Amino acid sequence: MVDRKRLSSVALTLAMIGIVAATAFGSMSVSPLSLQLSIPPEVTGSGSFLIRNTGSETIEVNITLHDWWRSEDGNLQVLPAGTVERSCAAWVVYEPSSVMLAPGEETEIGVELAVPADVAGDHWAMLLVEESPQPTEQQQAEEGLTDTTRVVVAYAVKILQRDPIHSDPGAAITDIQVIDDQPLQLAVTFENDGTAHITTSGTVDVRDVFGESVQSFDIDPFPSLPGEIRVLQILSPETLEELSAGTYYAVVQLDFGGDYLVQGGRLFEVMEDAVD
Image (cartoon, rainbow, N blue to C red; front, side, top):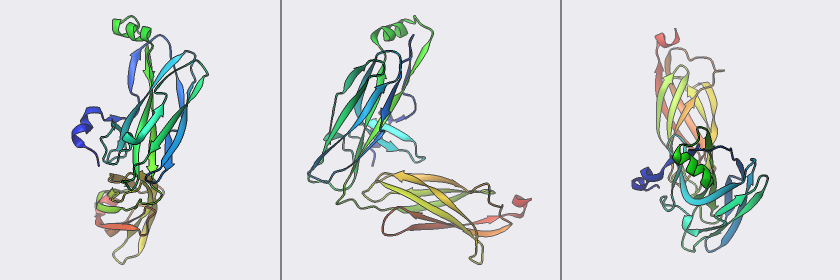
């Protein structure tokens, strides 16, 4: 769960972090962008990622520790370390935290995670990798001495500690709303109520008043964190024929990788004028 009081202070929808005035354009690549570490309680594990300067100028790169979360529509948010209930930020040690890279140069950032003995289930954190403007560029920007811009992009390296012993996946559908019927559009509220990070996929089956299936289509896989609530906007494919006037039942079935499937449904009616 997220501490809502602290959410508003730093929450960023990840895209570009800022724009600074500059006369040169620096660039970098970061790989991989996700470290999934299978580490049980009372064990220390490690991983790493690479930062490469792909531009033509020397750059300074800073790495800072944060938490991360997804909003109900699935957007990634960057939060202060320790904001999320299942944060592992306090267990993370990484080095270096700042580095200068010449053009074409790369460096490896080592990440160590020491999991305490008294925890269970999956936990997570994030390292934000951001290029810093050079001091001369920053001064020029502040003094308005240049009319060009440089977009400074930050990369998010997600750290996910998977508990191979005690994690317990769980999921539920808590609401289904019919937004439109031609084509069929559903808003499905899904909750990860377990202690494991999961990937869920599923199907929608549209049945008539006799219980016969008249339409069926897949729901693309999506990830979710423990405690996360997602409102999935599900749209039937354009290749399906429009529904004729009548009463229907939309059945949503989701497979989250656990010992059972979750299912929900909603009655809806297609009016005569909707198919004209």
